[in-house]
Image (cartoon, rainbow, N blue to C red; front, side, top):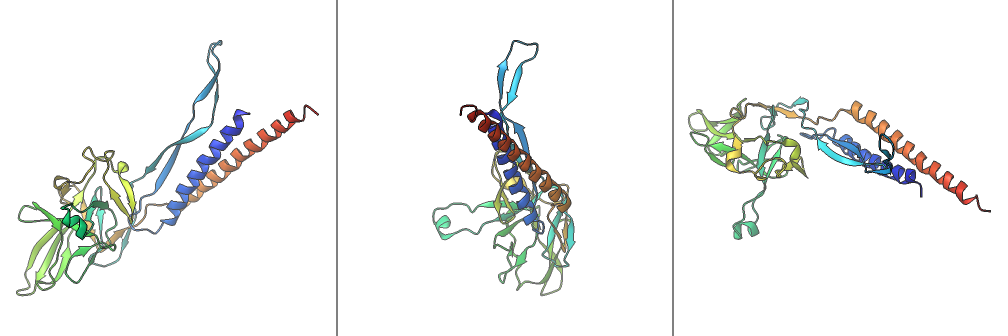
Length: 279
């Protein structure tokens, strides 16, 4: 069987995967905090035909996917004017925590922790700062920002609250109208953000590739100031997907798929000629 036919098949499979990546990027063009993905290819092993010449004679056997990277470039900011909408102006992620189930509590299992760039938070009736999926937003409190835990803004104690550029949440007390520091938004900055694993819902989980420990512990949670970044209140970070780039890459993928399909068609025609040699 001709090697070119299998090379064409490998090329078609690669461009199918490329179209999958492009389609997912375009589908999330309006997703808050979404980071686009990029696919890279590499050649497969080459078959040695001869080593008798000055240079080795080799024929390639097609291509394959080498990596699908997540590009953590910043997205554009959209002003909403909502006090609980926040975005990170720089590197880092907000830390959120899945609510602990009764089974986990009975087994004394800690709840799962995740990272996100989507800062469209809400406050429930108990005053807890949550994601739209109901995950607790984790912050720091205490005199030295040493206590880590879910952020709660007691509605009976505070009439209103605000978030400044340092990610500090100040509440206006109901009794005397004095503003006091409630908590500070926690920021986690992995060593290798591209190594994070997407888990859906604009959330990421830590892996060995993103951090040497592979988990989020209390020492990883810092303030915006300690993380050398700032927090913008009343703004959301939108997707970093560029439609112009994605549609251009879609054209490249489509033509590449067509070219590889032509390789298979031509190889089939040659095989047909070989079969017709014997009549």
